[in-house]
Image (cartoon, rainbow, N blue to C red):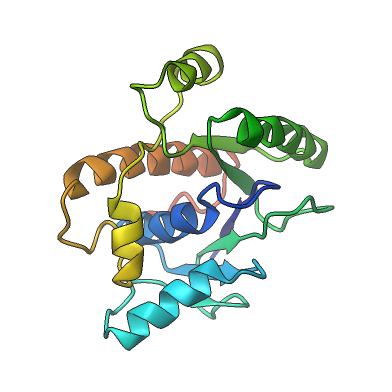
Length: 203
């Protein structure tokens, strides 16, 4: 069986890499994949999340560790916020905030992905469409790109050791709809590489 892999990366901290990685892992688990979430970030955001889940007796539908778990057919790498020479993932998922400082790092990050010759899925994160600056970036650079709105549910679910799929918090339905749109884009990108088309969903 083929193993597909995703690198969640941007060379800047605080853009939501671990949040996106955790909820992508949950989303693909819901779709029937056996997911191994590999934390390569020195800040250990995904591992801390897993430790919270364990302490609160929250069963996760995916594994979290420093290396790939046996039996996985989808690996999601949660990278640290630094410029690196290469990533192990078949595709790169790049969360970005839309403020000037964050977006100025996103652009050279996309150029690095082009050097790697790997497909890129951009994920505008913490988007506030009431802000003109955010609307302009979306309209100009990401008019057809699924994005995640600025919602408290992500931090609240993390603090409970849960993904947005497994919590019972306000805004859950809307957050899941947005994450599903992102997951659809990621899955379609993987399938264009003829990787893991079968195991992405349960038979």
